[in-house]
Length: 218
Image 1 (cartoon, helix red, strand yellow):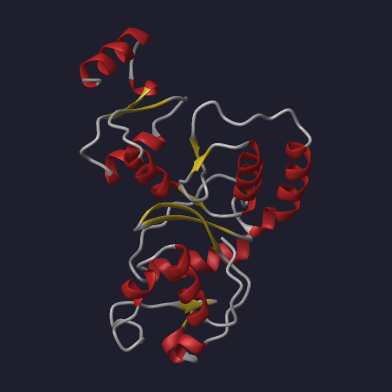
Image 2: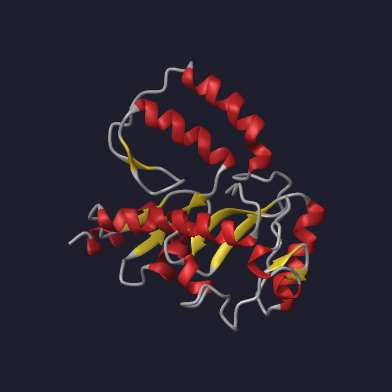
């Protein structure tokens, strides 16, 4: 997600507008950073710079929000290396991903613009059933919104946690992931442990999938 901000305070304010609760998590009632929170800009703790008035620079962006404590970030390689050193020093775990494209960041803006033109001119129709938009978890029901959200998510943050919550709000009580792996279903289990959720990839046969669905469909 791109945040157009001149300093750290503006970054926090704009992130809180997009993901309510972030400000109260990192700042106390006086507006100062909480004692256990450290924010780094280019590897330097802002407390030893200009605190929340520390100017921001281009660098790492949040690409995917998996949960409140799990993010995928993207950016240029040198910025990512600095980010990894900074958060590792704070005790956070970092798992480098074997990808070479900074998807869901502003580095993909030119590609998103070109994709949007092609998609707008295509035969894409409004979805027959509501589909949750990756950028905010809000149901997509029209062709125009489908074109807009599919285009935007190429260069904007994908909020997977909002999609999970959106499925629950829409009344989903059983979730089955289609595809060659189980990454999404594992994230659902972590965020919503009360839901029965599996991936097709976890079963030996299609019959096993059908049996599981029948047992939990109620």
